[in-house]
Length: 389
Image 1 (cartoon, rainbow, N blue to C red):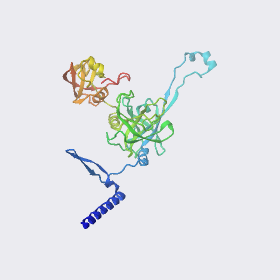
Image 2: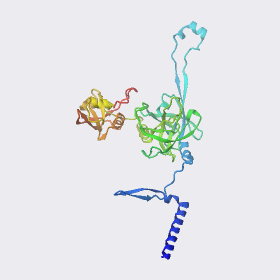
Image 3: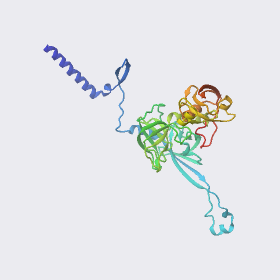
């Protein structure tokens, strides 16, 4: 019996020694994750070679992203209103041209992201809107003129082009790879002080109904985003682009820990359309909708608050020609559920003009379906465009 106990003690000692050596020299071999589950049994499975993410420093991520982020400087001429007194020769004799509103040069600054080695740059529409002159300052010290390839005010994105090659382009992250709680870095030129990196986490995903853009699906982050950061890069812990910095919530003009970035999936979709066609084309069916409040659900005698209420139908528009009426409740577009007005806007926008969309509705609590030929979304006034589809 004593012999067996000695063998057991030696086996335990050897096992502990092996685990100590592995933990010292190959710690990754001891990383576990949940595996397959069968009849309530959870099996943990070893992950071999999974790199540990260090939060001691994000220098490598910053080193990868910084060369691809540029500073953008714009100028435009603004002329004030001319006073009628300037046409009086006596007034001009005594006061000269001091009250003549000559054109004034207004400067603006922002940031951008190099998306291809041959000079395409992604930024915000509001950074370059109305600019007469655009200059791009690269990380290597060069400053080059840029032209606008195209812009999309409804997502606040624009694409610029500079005459240069072999530029350090950003690496795009996988679409929808970001999670709430992930580390992110915001890179840009806040307040014109120069290239700056700030750190935070993803506070929320899919933020909408903010009234910032027509199409909203923002990443919210507490990484400091300040004036001048607009159009800069939001990158993950590996330095890959996950969003384009766009706006902040602030009562003072400075960062209060609530910043918003356009996700890379939407930015890439818009960017590729602009580069390929010069404009962004979206679907439209000619309806106005509103979200279903408890009061509307009760007023219309609905069974639940699923879908959105069609508040208006444009006469002669695609939906009107197909038989859709005000008071209908839109539930699905091509079998994809409609949760609110924001989701509907995105569902219809991705439809191609000329194709047929199937709308599933409820009319007086009875299911009905219509085939609607999608038209091209027109440009609309900012105050009406949010709920027009």
